Length: 123
Image 1: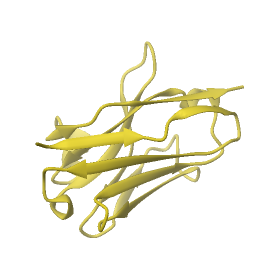
Image 2: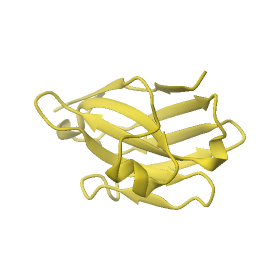
Image 3: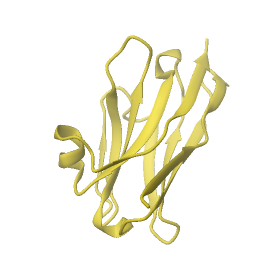
């Protein structure tokens, strides 16, 4: 059974930090790219970041560049999203998803979706 389990969300003040984790199982982790998406109430879902677990290449949305860092621990089949200098507009449910490539995640429905974790940033 394929699982993508996101965790690490919470409530934080503006300027604070959180680290999200996405633990994957049920598929060959090294063959996939893992991305983070978010959706705030009343807004479209947005791809935040992606990492290719095979070569470490990364993608960041302009809205998070310089503040968020994505990384992968292939031994643990886990991808992390370190979020620093958080802003109230970062408030959303964050999801992780997997596809063959980051390009695929950006333009096609992902092969696999995980459940979300709520991030709330207070002003």
